[in-house]
Image 1 (cartoon, one colour):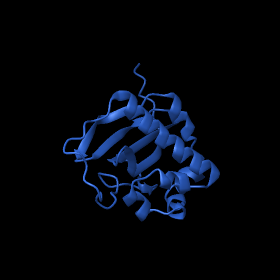
Image 2 (cartoon, one colour):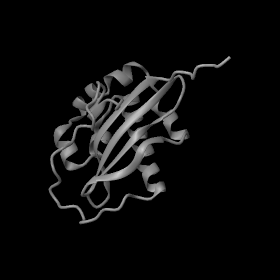
Image 3 (spheres, one colour):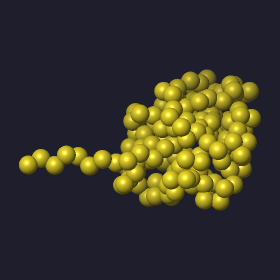
Image 4 (cartoon, rainbow, N blue to C red):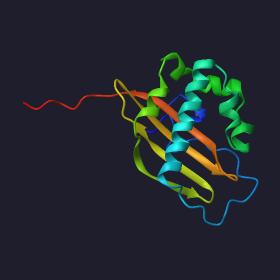
Length: 159
């Protein structure tokens, strides 16, 4: 199941995270998928930004890291409401910074200048699922975010 959508959201999500308005400046004709190190930096920095916002109650930096469309669709108060469930569950997203993500499918360019990463951090007792969109605007900027915690179940023990 897809994590909660966020232009940031903490409720059940549609197949893809919500999108912002189309880019004002055209993306390069062909935007390559970033290398593995860049992908991990984008993912981990996003998780860190959400974690800091949840811990401080200040979502303005998370908003400011977003694309112009993301910023236009989300003020800091809206983001606070969107991530209220994760915050109330006291999910420590900083744990995601010390483990490798497991991608549901390979990170990919889903349309010109838009990168999508979807997967999870298989932590216990709760896995953290994510579905992230980034828009190329002289660098990758957060364009859509879905994050949620789900209970990890242990595989059945065979006897």
